[in-house]
Image 1: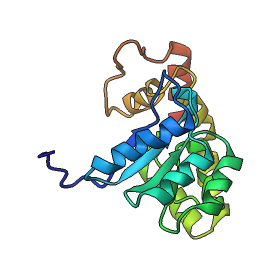
Image 2 (image 1 turned 30 degrees about the vertical axis):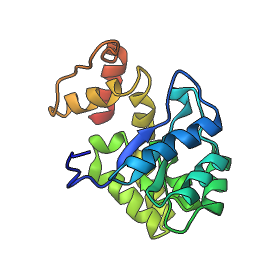
Image 3 (image 1 turned 60 degrees about the vertical axis):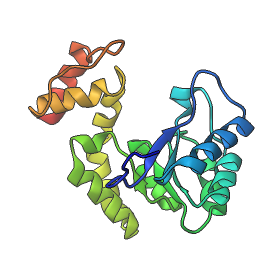
Length: 198
């Protein structure tokens, strides 16, 4: 309360991690955030990092419960779950890919775009992929995507954000540094990234 949220389009709220809440716990958690947030909320489902999956049923329950919950960043890797959400969501609720490798498949199901790791280094190209999927020009979207598939894999070999930091370092944009307990990518990965960028 009393804080300014001017210029903030939405907040991205990751599912609570470590304590592995039930689906009812997740529903109540996000309901509580929705009841006090002055900004719209994007759910962030990334069970590989949090240890808990926001199921399609819970996502849909939240999407229908609150107009302040406007989207989900879906990084479960489960296209069956994404399909269920797209099929039963409110018209104005957005499904956003949380995985560069799945941007096109999720878009083909009705997804709205991607919150991307790779776009930190290649915003124009990732924007073009999304633009092409929205025009249902999947051939052109695939052409761009296929140029980056090897790099997408390299971004996660030694963890994220270490991979994208290494890319940005090669591009002379940032230092190749992360905070502990993270560490920079190993030399082999760094050299492979350099080779790709060349």
